[in-house]
Every structure is written in structure tokens, then in C-alpha cells.
Image (cartoon, rainbow, N blue to C red; front, side, top):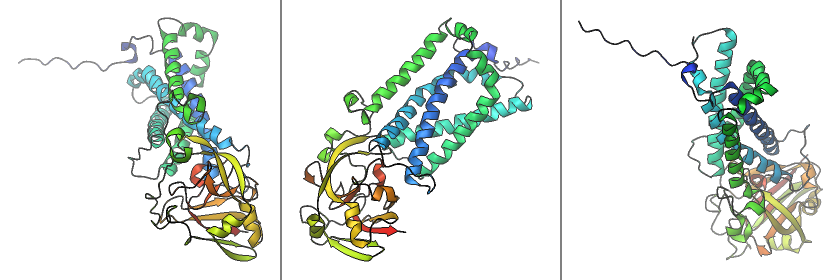
Length: 382
């Protein structure tokens, strides 16, 4: 009887001889990735608080460019995380073949944290990049899922660091630095860092205009957009009535304003008759793009004075038929800010349909998705 050859033994970490698969490289890539993840996580929390405000943790109205910078950092650190994560996984993957599979409780905790961290990290960066690109192929609400997985990823990262702290500490000692310089290890780390820096440069033009021409991966370009400001959600996508069009006028449009002193109905002509103000404010999107713009319209606090003033937060409702951002809540401090306008004009021209004709909200240091377009109702809440 012919004897079948024995199956090959499963590989072990020692079978992978590349100098890149070294604990010093793994630790250093992990440190770089940890910095990127931390910046991304903290700026993500700030964006979430803008959209889901907490009364005891108010977000300041200034600087006016604050959200532009923090969300730019969020997208840039997310872009840098992609090559850093791939490099970290490549350097560390031989450890998946460590035997025995079931080890001590500490080893099992380490493996569990790695599994959760890798899975949530891949979920975070892939959906984040897709969102920046406007590629909504996932069939779920991006912001809620992204927020939930951010906490899963940061929790798994904290557990992983706690378990691997002795190895990390050893890798960051002078002896570990010496080991990383030999046999191409240092080159691998520097190469991964260079690719991460390149990813940032290719996307950060959304926030830094000077890098606009080289940032080929940025999601929107103001210079190629109507009135110099990109449009995420068009009037057609929002199912705005065809009657609401600059070409046919705004005679049929009305704005309902409710407050402590009652309700006022304003026509577009009455709104234009009120004192007009001009402000220069950036508009910044959660996708990372931003654009500086000049807005002209009526100060919101002047309109609210007609119904008793800004005595509380202010709710806005759009003419959109539906949508996550059909309504938004403007904190009182923003409502009373002199730069917060019910805007009628953008960069010297009347608003287009896609930019929110006839009236939209614009306020400093606020996400673009909360700068409600096609405003029809304004209500002061005490």
C-alpha cells in the first residue's frame, strides 16, 4: 500500500525571514498608526458634537475657520491611516501563525483585541474614504455606523496597547532604534511614512488652497463649482419644487419665523428689504472639502428680534421632502452671532437652486451639512 506524504507543517513566525517582520518595525508602525487614529478620533468626536450638541458641552462659535481645520485634519489623518494600517498589517501578519492557537489568557486577550482592532479599522478607513469620494455603496447610515465603529476601534486599540506595552516600550528604547536601522527595517518604516505623507498631500488641498492643484484625490474643487462653492446635495436630489427657481422668481416663497412674541410670515421681498450684511465665512463639509466665500443676507438675530429675539436654540426646517439634514438645530450662541446670516447671495450673485435659493443659513465654525438650504421655517425654542 502506498503511503501518502505527510501534510506540510503549518508555518510559524520563524518561517518568515524578511527583516521587515520584526517586532521593532511592528511597534514603530503601530505608534505612527496610533497617532493618526488618535487625531482622527478626537476630530471625529468634535464633528459629532457639532451634529449632536450637548447642552453642558457647548462648541464655541469661533474661530470661524475652526471646523474647516478640524475636519481637514480628520480627513487627512484618515487618509494617512490607510498606508500606515497596511504597512502595520504586513509587518505583523506572521504572528498570526503563532502556536499554540489557544494560549494563556493574556495571549487570548491580545488576539481578540487584534481581531476587533483590525476588523473595525478596515471598516473605518474603507467607509471613510468612500464617503470622502462620495461613493455611497454601503446600504446603511454612514455617520451612525462610522461613529459606532470609531469607539470599537479606539477601545480595541487601548486594550491592544495595554497588552503589548512591554514590547512597545522595548522597541522605543535606544536598543530598539539600533535594531530598526539594519537590514532595511528603517527604510520600510520611512517608506510607509512617506506614502502616508503623500496620501495627505493628495487630499489635503480640500483644506489648504495652496495644495489644490496637487491634491488630485480631493473630493470637490471650488474653482470648478458654481459660484465657487461645491454642491453636495442638489435641488433635484432634495426633491425641491421646480417652482422654486431664480429664473421664475421667489414671489410664492414665504418664511415662517416663530418665537416668544408669536409668528411672523416674511416674503422674499420683505427679507430683502431688511438691513443687508456681508460676511466672509468658509463653508466646510464633513467630507473634508472647504471653500472660502462671501455671503450677503440678513442677520439672523435681526429676523429673530421680530418675534422676541434669540432666547434659546433655533430650529431650522428646509423645503426638502426628506433627508437626514432636512432639519437642524442652531445653538443660541450661534443664533446671536453677528456673522450668522439668512443668506440671499453668494460671492456677489443670487443663490442658485443647488445652493439653497432663495434663502439658506450660514454660520461660523459649523459643518456644511448643518448650514440648512431652502429654509422655510425658523423656530426659537426656549
